[in-house]
Length: 314
Image (spheres, rainbow, N blue to C red):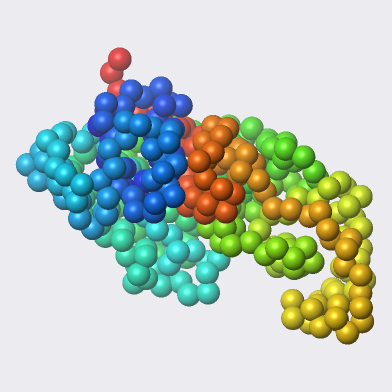
């Protein structure tokens, strides 16, 4: 197959195709984030990077891009258009009026220029009125799958495709604790990996506050006893306080907060495992960049489940 991947990220689509035993002849990737491109090229030397989606066009069998033109028949168009303006985790939810999520229109335009045999579109769980708009463009309702079926993280996503999917992925019952390289978590599943994970807090008490009181990020403790000690200390001194109020109380009352020392965020291998990526897939990136691109990424085993039902001849 010849694949056109829009908003390609770190090429999770390519990993999923390989995992589904689909032979790829040419894989064209439209992506502009440099860290994602470096990670992709580190793992797949044959991927053809074609740059900005707004400069991608297809006409009379020719794929026209800012990186060059290619005479090629495209068998499948895939992509996960930006979700920031759909995500209910954000303060402003502007849908297709948002500056990032309106890039969906370029996916839609290119899909109709190419007219491939198969297509696949992913986006975040969103308000019903926004989902209805995308349904009207895609002329179908999406499949709704939470990645926690195949990994140790919650990640509710919508998938529009003309690939017939007879069944959902099997629940592998993987826990967050199962993927930790060390330490302890009281959570059965990780919170959804987000791009904002790449902008971590570094003061342990603030890390704990954001995780415990605000349900952001994912935190790992040295042991179960360490977690219990942090929880009891927080409930005693800081429960119900804002981050600023905690700062003031620590300063004014000279409270010892060393109990929180040793809490940590997820490391690279854990983030890879939670997206069901191969181990060391992000080896070329540092931890913050890995958090960034994994927050953008697909859960590979979910996508591979779709691709294994492609009706292809041997």
